[in-house]
Image (cartoon, rainbow, N blue to C red; front, side, top):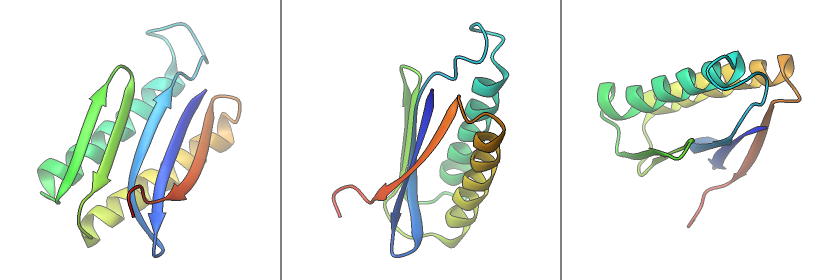
Amino acid sequence: MIKVRFSVGNRQLHGFEISGHAMFAESGKDVVCAAVSSAAYMAANTITDVIGADAVANAEDGAMCVTLNQANEQAQTVLRGLELHLTELSKQYPENIKIIYGGVKNA
């Protein structure tokens, strides 16, 4: 199962962590994994490279983590879009994607 954890504080999204495998289909043919990965990379690249927000993004070993170091309205919009997209996917594939909300780490 893919686990998506959104960090929340003061009614704002501060980042996300994605880990796990969808197990919807064999590797290379898993449309759920592809949808989540594509959305996550789009969000991370938009936040860091297009907007230029003060954020840290790491992707390794099948996991991704993006954390905003400073509030940014444009990055917030991207994070809310990712949240909406992944929430809708989790409704379509409840056995494969789980959305979790937690407090901001180190806050």
